[in-house]
Length: 617
Image (cartoon, rainbow, N blue to C red; front, side, top):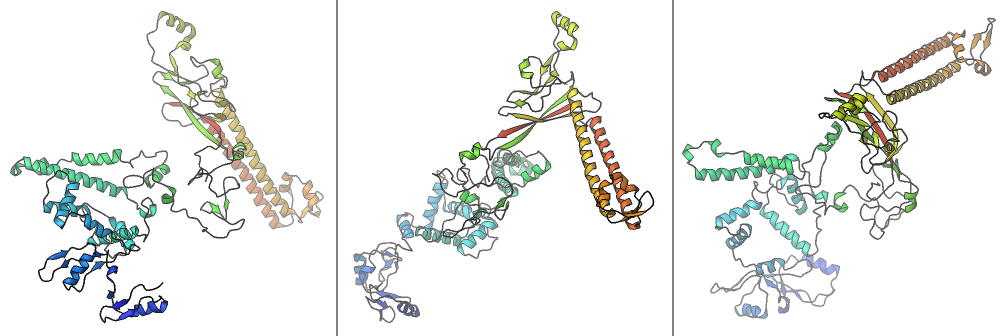
């Protein structure tokens, strides 16, 4: 690169670097050593098409010849020479790291002073209202520079200070004039390609706003509205005879608060499934709501700030290297799911953001097929007209629809059900209307069978199907159990008995194995009162119950065996006691709410294949 023009020191009038010299590191160092900050340009062409930074004034008359922001032309240069003006200030715009944006704006701006500019701003914000300079200035300053109308918050002030290297106190939460200047400078740099643009949708550029702050903003709006109403009332009544409670009406404020808690975007019905669900719902953070993201603009680039790649572009990886890891994995091993071959690649846009494409074989082979068990519950109550009855005899239902029910009206385990099928038959008494002579005759012949009842059976909800895997019946104490409840109770008792026998066998094996370890190699007296040494053949032929009656010569071993015998007997007694307690509790019935006679729970298993929209990872 060569110097195109001679560079002349403005103070000494000496040529520092001549035209045509190649720019080298030594030349640049010499240029930095020279402390002169003003240089002559040797040709007039270099200042043409530049812009004046200050007005050119006739020093004799004081007349403004050429205003600032005007483009320098040959006419201006000739006039300056004729008036012997030795110095003019120009705006150096090279269109590389600086542009003429502020100059272009000033040229297009019709306002020549602050008062006109404020008047134009007021006309845009308050169209049709008359303005005065004081009112216009007050409106403009209240929009950005008044703490009551504008609040950056401490976090916002910290972000601005960090972004633009400012030292404004964090207590100053309104904008300052310095903030406006540095923001304009940053925007101009962005226009020239300098600096980076912040993503407004990124959660890194947002902060948590508590409910107290949101209520505060709504409360402030209510106070402003109430203030206006108070001022209006004061202008229409005599102040001398008015008390404060005659002017203040809190209904306006209450309506704002009621509106916030009733129809706000973040107002939700609390999840009251259980106390843990309530706490989790109260602690939940939302990126949506007033001032937050919109569902149309919330992409993964802005919301998943905690997901970052651990590999970089150009990094060399080998087979077996970990590409993605997380809190639920350990060295690339995931505790759940299936190990499948995964390819990280674009596929015609179908796997955009969090989308995952699966091969058809994974679906056919049920690799990601899951079984969901749904619980359905029906309650039989004691109503004012009589008790509700669980029965197979349901009015106006064909026998074909009852084939999967047993004699008591409850669905059989293993039956396949579809939407609309009856799971539990139930009839509820309804208000009896005056009987006709024919109905009286039927009542006399068939008794209660002719009573007015309506069908209130439990059916499979729409869209659900599956296989019955379990049935549980809870009967209130003192109410007679039906055959199905007795059958389930019998099966439960058999399960208790089997569990007790299994536990007995396990503890028996444990205890007698320890006893045989103690006996091995010890001396014991036989029937003829002779001492023999216990070996493996002796232990194999020994029955478990015979070990307690052996006479050992070793006192310590004898004491250890006695302790094991005592532990074994106590454990068996505890098993028997627990078994009896479970059986008694099962046979005694259940503690149900007032008016509830019976609760039946049906468990339906549904096999679901993976489909679009399911969560994969």
